[in-house]
Length: 452
Image 1 (cartoon, rainbow, N blue to C red):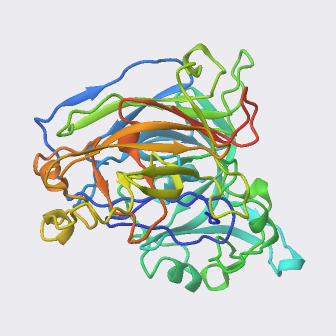
Image 2: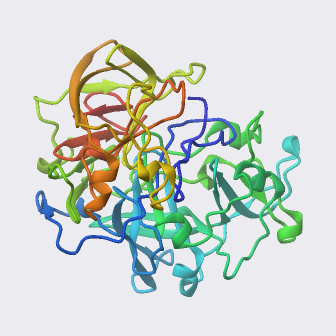
């Protein structure tokens, strides 16, 4: 997939737009129309603990919330500080945990009291980039996040990154920069400019690479894709496409983590550990996010797991992908993504005529509603030819949503007619420990790869 690592969602199906070239997986979310079930089961995993861990929660969303919830959205809590300060800090809950994107993106109002220093892009003659304040447009088919860039110290659990570039998402209630025409075009006119539209207080992207764009953005060569970065020397009216050095681009916070007092650095990947979920779902799920792979006793990869390297050739359509085959169908551009809230794949044999797909129940579009639970075995194939089998099931979305829960291990939906992608979204993570390595970081087995 020759697109940027762009993720996230609004309340409907989001098949992501091309974001200017670079590294990519895609995140898909379908709105659930859920109000939550206070009497539903709560399942929790409270181990492991340690300075390199934090809680992951799947619930009905932030208190500032939204009218229509969405199933299977994992959240973490992040603390942001003015660079160099231990006290000028704010802690933000319900930040969307996404292994399919890169970087920390928060609503500007949440950190306004900190006065974070704005990032300034230097002039770049070859691309006609003027020096000025830096902003980013992160586009999706049905929406985009837009806003200025700043530096902040970031803490997650006991881990810390210093002076990290982050995006401050502009909000409809108090916009600072007008959305450029190209950004509006990339977003199909829709901008995710509130927690209600984003269904979160921000995004924590901890995918397989260290930067959200890389060389294409460093040279200002966006090709046929939409522009990601802008220089805005005179404010909104003067925002123009920019060439942005890598050190000013959005960075993977995990790759930027600092060594602890003992010299241990947990910057080569992450592990998401989630408990199993009952067949009819759960009202709350609590799991663990563990930073580092093989750096401490609590993040060792068990011998029983299999490593699945992904394709690392940017010239291939299967870039950063795995292969999936099931039921005689093949999906060569597949990937594992905590930021997708179901298993998404095209299977014309599965019934689509569910109430939740018609929109009459307000629960979104594209869910699968088979008359009985489908139980299948898929084969996942790595870029090196190794493979393994995965059992999964798809239940009737109307039945699942009817119970009012928000976490489902058997929720499936369409990736679009004829799609060659199988998205192993959050349901795949339930009952598993899923490792995501970061390309270029020190590992016993070089990344990028998933392991489970």
